[in-house]
Length: 140
Image (cartoon, rainbow, N blue to C red; front, top):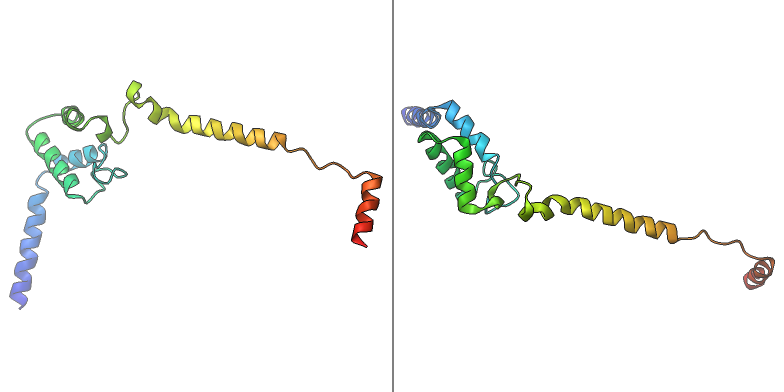
């Protein structure tokens, strides 16, 4: 039993070391994976996602970097294949202006509506003497 456990630990350690042959390559893969959006999860990078597609994209990044492509080449390939949506921080251009300006427009609109609502509310007016007498009679 101890031999089997030792063998399993040795195999597991060997696989881990083999998977990290080139720490520089893994660092580059991780760096690029943090720049790309998971197309399944959409609110995570492919580095953070456990979706099978994210794993495939990480492997594809690794293979392209092993083949000698630069980070820019890999990003350009992903954008050509999946569009600007795959970028976790899409560029500012005509197609993405609503994405970048939308939150600021909504914030300004909300501030304007709040200002109008607060300004319209007038403080309650003081009661006249006749109204006070009438209220006192109603309370008796």
